[in-house]
Amino acid sequence: MSGCIRMPDPGVAIALLAAGRAERFGGGKLDALCAGKPLGAWAAQAVEAAKCAFQLVVVPTACPAFAKELKGWSLVTNTAPEEGIAGSIRIAATAAQGFSRLVIALADMPLINTAHLRALAAADGIVFTAYPDGDRGVPAAFPARCFGRLIELKGRAARLDWGEEITLFSPPSPQSLLDVDTADDLTRAQALLIGE
Image (cartoon, rainbow, N blue to C red; front, side, top):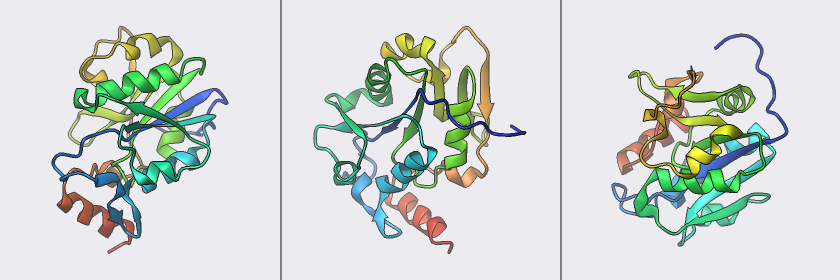
């Protein structure tokens, strides 16, 4: 992607998904300290800086402490986290009804880039993040015409045939796509955040 980046449309909603069960981590992942903050707070900070019209966080019934501390966010509960990310996306798309666009981000990606989120928010059509291995995934963004399909999502949105052109955006740095699943991932994220 090149050229000027437009600011997000005032009708854009952005959802931070924070309802995973963190089984590989051993639980409590998003409240684990990482470079002086709860892990989930780093992604929330990047989302806030993107300045979209509506910020929501999808949480499990046992809401993480970092999410309870967020100001100006809508908290939506996922009562069936065992359904995986698709369940949280369904909830986010339902909550985003009435907005022109939905950006989806993950709370366990502490190095997520605000400029990348803004680019997704300001783009047209369906946009996924391009991963270095050639895969596509989150963060991602969808126009309102896709919300109905997201509300009925099963499996991974990135693997669906959407029947229209899909755009891929690469983030400024592949490191921003670090997804913390294990204690070792948390250690790596902390080193990157403090510049070791």
